[in-house]
Length: 105
Image (tube, rainbow, N blue to C red; front, side, top):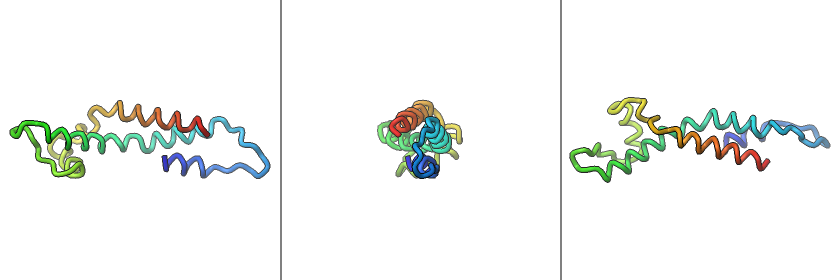
């Protein structure tokens, strides 16, 4: 949301003119989505791995101490692609959020 505000608020309309630019909110939403939505996937995956680790049997646990610890260890133990595994629903969530959020402006 901060990225969208930065992009949308950085545009300018001359005084005494109504801003009829219908595409500006959608363009800013697409730019904000494209630059930030993919970054949430590794953090969400690490958080899910941390909480799931507590429910596994002792012999299968990875013993993550925090979501940050999981985020740092997963690329070396499971491979970097594991952090983006199952990321489509998260990215779709972010895309829907930015699309609906921009309609209000």
